[in-house]
Image 1 (tube, rainbow, N blue to C red):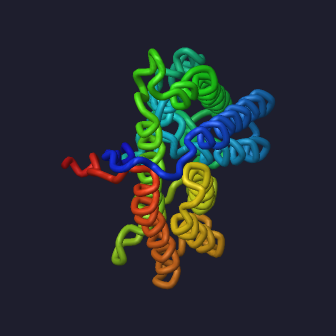
Image 2: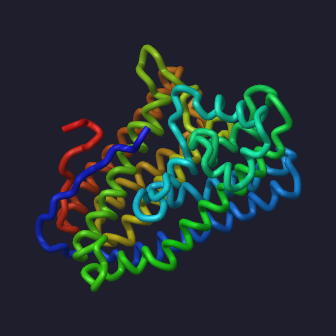
Length: 322
């Protein structure tokens, strides 16, 4: 399932924006940290496939991913990397089915070159989660699959980090330069970053929180992201923090938007429901709905305030088919 795509329409000359600070202070360090964390995870997997030994490195890698998971542009989107790193939602359980085939199939499929061509549903953080945090005993010894998945994650993270550092960052920082067909103006750079922010807030409200909420008559806590590893609420907190950081670097004087983020972050910090299990209870559900409302308010405030500051506004939602 693809995240909603948002188009931006240029308006006035932007007043407050620092895309250089976003690239150099938010994006590049974020991808460097993710590459380092996945390297550590792959190293730990090479040393031992013991689930308890792997869990801290897995959690650290997921933490690092959440700091950049909202950036669906450039190297992360090429070759389907972002989708392979975090294939979720998976309503049909495609990942588990594909993993069963890999566990019991030809070991050659787990070689690095072959594994990179396997289903994205069986790879990445969500695929790896099912191995140290299994719902049921695996069909076969998972050690080879753990090592293949961790190594594949480290490879993708390293490629993304290198391609940002050695090329794509320069494209964003030199709009209009000779040979730069990706960004012709500074406003296109601001548009791209603004779109990442607005799209991520929409996904956070509608999917990360909306899926487990379900409906009042049919709450769906089992649909929470990263439920097996207990990360559902942690992912919400981490993404809110990352998006606030992006906003503060892009438009540091956007006081209303930053205040809206602070309110949403405060609500998330007070919530004691790690995997949104309490959405099945009316009182617990209300707390998550209030958080969801605060995230939507942060998005609406960002669209209004940053849109004016950056000289862009949200156009249509491509996911609606308009």
